[in-house]
Image (cartoon, rainbow, N blue to C red; front, side, top):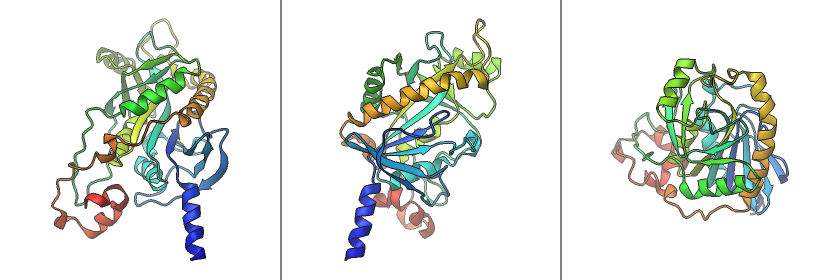
Length: 297
């Protein structure tokens, strides 16, 4: 009994309500207390790094550096499924993806923040679903961002004095190279707002995992379309990243104090999505999906 109680207490300490995946420039989260570093194994492989779990205001928060400490993993090499599954293992209800983006609109200047509500997928070599290998699920992604959670993210960021653009379309490119000028102008002709390399897969997987998802896109440059600005390069991005990371850290602290209730339709995204005859699902696949879809299988 004592051992069971100890395990339960440890699991409760690890359980987080808010999950944060930090992108370029955001490799740690300040001001956490009662901190644990948690290394997880998932049915989909290893996450990018250890999860840092701690208290931030009234909320328990789990933080993961998307590219690993030291920025070791390129966008195309990221194990998105393991990263999101690990958040689910930790009990996360809300998942915030933070990342650097290029602006595709003149009014979105470097240093501004966008909370997008739509995505366009321009990737080609990534796993964006937990399903397959004997089970098929089609989740609704018409509105890939949780409206209530995004509103809370917007308010917390605006409270820190940031210029926040509410809504807009995030083009997710494969990378790791930046856009050609023709590509950048094509995306602008589509009316897209920003371009990045990571948040789309996290949005899709969060929906399958029945998590409330929002993106905090930190603008660092004008990509390469702006005739009066220098083309994007790493040096100019790094100069903006430091300030953006400090802003994101403050905004996350505010968000942890103002999360909406977890009673949301995101919690039942899989309810009518699985079309496979349950008797036809292989045992190994059923086991792998136990945390994600067990209640429906």
